[in-house]
Amino acid sequence: MDILHDYLVRARASGAVFARSVVRPPWGLTLPGSIQLSLHTVVRGHAWVWLDNPAEAERLLPGDLAVVVGGRDHHLADEPSPDRCVTHEQFWAAGADEDPDAPHAAVFLCGAYRLAGDVGQSLIRALPPMLVIRPSAHDHLHGVVSLISSELTQSAPGQQTVLDRLLDVLLVLVMRASYQDSSDAPSWYRAAQDPRLGRALQAMHEEPARSWTVPELANLSAMSRPSFARNFERALGQTPMQYLTDWRLTLAREYLMAGELTLEQIARRTGYSSPNAFAATFRRHVGIPPGRWRQEVSG
View 1: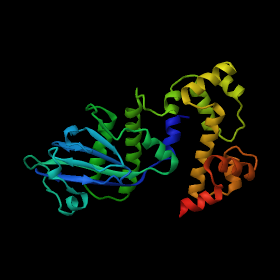
View 2: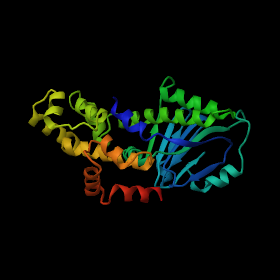
View 3: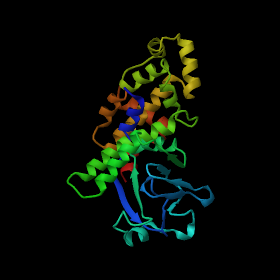
View 4: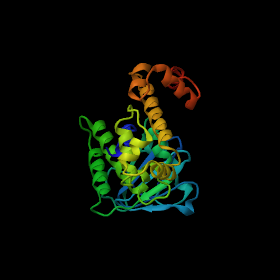
């Protein structure tokens, strides 16, 4: 099992909102920080994107991709000037030039979406506030963006499903680009690249219900028990059993949010001998019983 896949499949985006705009200068819009994750790419022309300081704006050319994490407003315009920007509601309410071949016209895509649950939040926290990726003409990112742009040119049955799945692919490629050689990548991502520690992580993800022991995991990693424990804690900042407990509770919260399993079923799937044992561990780490946590999350 690919560990990144295991995280992403539990954080699948849905209901993605995309907009394709064709505009001529001057133009600009401000998008609110309440959007969990925004994506912007230029199909033709150019655009500038920035957070608080227009002096730090990044220029986007065709094929470039900007990913902005929620929390702060951000801005998109033909020039890095706040004076050009209106609210996103005002921008799209005003309509857009329908002729993409008009002189000086810019064609760009905006996407806004949300990732589900704790896993989605942890993936987003590992991203920088704004990430600009500049793929080559033959890069996979370029191909996916082209497919999204093509899908948005006309309405067709199943369009939302197509956009959601393309967004899944795009997110995987963005995460790869962001995490590759980054000191800010999640510790589990870096550890998963280690050929020895990666085997232990893979085993815990594939069989979270199994009663793993440190000697068993060390054996899978072809290391002595002390060496494995030392290297694991150095790489991930916690012991193997702490990591396993955290992953089990992450899964438990996902199951609780889905509301499809009983506490007994969740306990069994996450490696606990009884609902009481599961509830005790959950309360010790989360602070409240799982039943109450589910009620609070579901509103």
